Every structure is written in structure tokens, then in C-alpha cells.
Length: 174
Image (cartoon, rainbow, N blue to C red):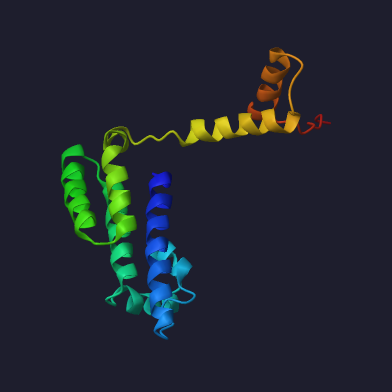
């Protein structure tokens, strides 16, 4: 799910950058300094920031449409049952395909290609985030050691760094 958030956020940012360039050429600074407003969840904004963002969000900007597409797709992950989730995705994908926003069209295609894997999250509510994190830590161990004399030393290093050992000295009770 996190990956999808990043991909959708990147697409919104691409739309914003392109639109900002066009607006600035016309002397309009509406989108200047708003990058993180489009990437943040509105519930995590301060009330005054939320009001200012509501004006942007309700404007006719292409970036506002891209943001609406992103937020609507993120609602997909709240579904608990596969059938309504599939219906929501079909509706969202059609909207994205007709949006005339190239980054959103590309994300829609990519999500459609990976939909089988995405819908697995709806069924089981698990992701591969834990295994990805563990793999990243193993890769870090491998990189920082700059090689091992043998496979067993590498295995020991993985156990040491990833085993969750508490190495703090314990104080004997008096």
C-alpha cells in the first residue's frame, strides 16, 4: 500500500510541476510553495492550512483533479470485501483514463497491470513490508561489511543485526 501512495503522490507532483510552470509563465503564482500540501493527508493539516488548501482543492486546477484521483484511489484500501473493491477500482480506473492527465493515466495503467497483487491486500490485509524491511537490513549488513570471508560469517552477522537481541547489560538484583 505504501508503494501505491508514493506512486500516486509522484503522479500528482508531476501534474503540479507542469501546471505550475505554465501558470508562472502567465504570471500566476497559485501553485508556488504548495508541493507538500498536495502530498499531505488533509486530516494531518492544521485548521488554517486546511482552509487554505480547500480553496486550492476546489479550484479548477489540473493538480486538484490529480489530487482527487489520488485520494479516491487511496479510499480503495479501506474496502474490506473484494467485490466492492473491484467495482471501486474499475470506476476509478475509468476516471483516471479519461482524466487527460498523463501521469495519472500512467499510474492507472500500472495499477491495472498489478491489480491481482493489489486486491490480495483486500483479501488478506497483509503486505510484504516486513520482509522488504528485513531484506533492506540484510543488504545494509552486506554493504557495510564490504564482504565476508565465508558464508557462515555473513549468516552470523545477519543474526546479530536482525535477531532483535537486547545487548544492554542487565543489573543483578541486590
